[in-house]
Image (spheres, rainbow, N blue to C red):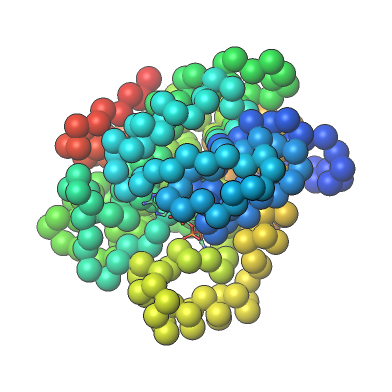
Length: 298
Ligand SMILES: NC(=O)c1ccc[n+]([C@@H]2O[C@H](COP(=O)([O-])OP(=O)(O)OC[C@H]3O[C@@H](n4cnc5c(N)ncnc54)[C@H](OP(=O)(O)O)[C@@H]3O)[C@@H](O)[C@H]2O)c1
């Protein structure tokens, strides 16, 4: 990953004002990195709405829950209407899985990793972006959207068989979700000037994300996560490091920027041309439309 020297920000003291009273939605905030971010932001005084399948923070002050199965596009559409978009200062998308060794399909006919790690974000982002933060009382900063994935890693995706119906391999399918998320950031930054959009690349963090690939609680999964745990920061350590980035006023003029695991700006993947993004997005929207849900990109 190459550093982007044109984007810089200053880490402020933990006591600096920032999170207090902010309205934040963390889609995927029930587990892993999203949960660590939610808990940390709530501890700093933010009002956090988490979206996921299993709520693990009942009773934690500042955290409320919307339950949803985001492998389904109609659920993504419902959540978009239930989120208080007009009051939100920030939305963080962290929902994700890793593609299974054998192709899995949702009841709406979509390859499961693509649905959970990428397409539900496409649906939600376009549904809420135009209204984000429009009814906030204090609005020193534009509303912010962070998409977590693996931006800057060189993945640009292929869109001729997005649903992996002709052939299926776990790694390329997951890389399409990675590329899709990076493109969502670049596309939304151009489309919606009333908000700002950023990509987050957390590097490797010990969570449950690889369960679907190795098998939940399998020996392989436990060995992989133990190894990753020995070599990499915890989700809590990453959250503590990255939350000052999420809140800094210095990002205001840099919509479309991407950041590595240390919060340093990185360049987008080479090859994400406007034409490629347009075609990838058109293929993504056409696939979502098969479920009866329309993507409203305005
Ligand atoms: N961990 C890493 O090493 C790593 C590396 C690079 C990028 N990332 C990216 O970081 C993000 C977060 O990953 P993570 O490691 O924190 O993963 P994780 O621990 O597995 O957490 C994933 C989150 O997604 C939610 N989720 C999964 N399937 C869902 C579904 N069908 N409906 C609703 N929610 C669902 C989970 O909620 P429930 O538990 O409630 O189902 C959980 O909140 C992802 O975008 C991932 O691609 C992670």
